[in-house]
Image (cartoon, rainbow, N blue to C red; front, side, top):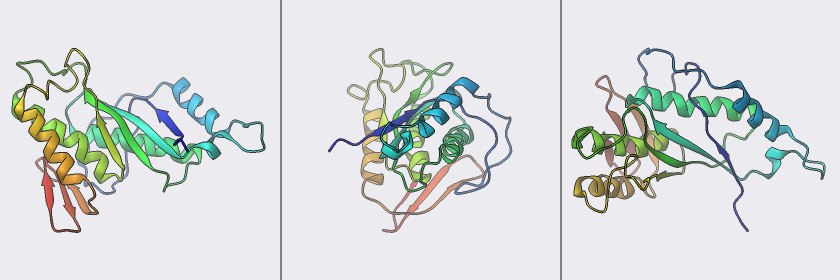
Length: 198
């Protein structure tokens, strides 16, 4: 049986309540286009011709999370904005969630020179850790052919190591606690006693 996934893409909207992360107030993110939101709401409630509605056929939800500003607060807000939309659509809280594309985008695409390698490594780790902290079941890093979204893991050992560390540090783990620390470090603690920071 094929897994049916509803895929959502939208810019972040509104402010988020305190939850798994302790957030400091930041500037409000840009508003979403009302058309995009309307389409998603209409799909979830649309009759399927067999007595059900669209959301009855969704077994998992996929989102895309691109970095337009490398502030972890904005990434957290974007994922929380998706959750608010899922609530409006009537999707169950336990419906599996995935980030099926994540990477850098304008104005801060990866080039050979920028951002500095330490920032690239930190961003890759956060792209994996933030969705994990918000209970997403999987994250798929997107490497565009021109290398601007992820860099070149095949030829840059630091990027490959960051990806490997996240794969090994997150796979099969049970999250106990997560926090955004005062210095903007993401911290995850797992039931096996291991921790990740980025």
